[in-house]
Amino acid sequence: MPIFVPPLFLLGTVTPGLNKFATDSLGNNASVVGRLFACNTVGSILGTFLPTFVTIPAVGTFVTFPIFSGPLLALALVYFLAARARTETCGDTPGLGVW
Image (cartoon, rainbow, N blue to C red; front, side):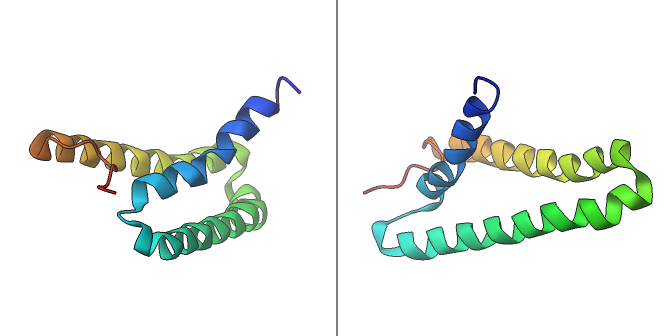
């Protein structure tokens, strides 16, 4: 339990956190949540089948990890750098909409 509960707890906070930062108003909340879950589903399917059937047999496990973790790291860096640039230019906290 001490090994699995903290990572699973943190994974459970990702979608509500993304929803908070992606929603501008309550009027478009349902479409934002729908798009997030659609992206989540597509990512889960690709993340399950692509490494298992394509990259691990082709290049091995050692190369598969950087192939999939590199774009995720790049995406996170781009987001945080863009959020920081937006904060510096606008003087606003990123992701906090006016209710």
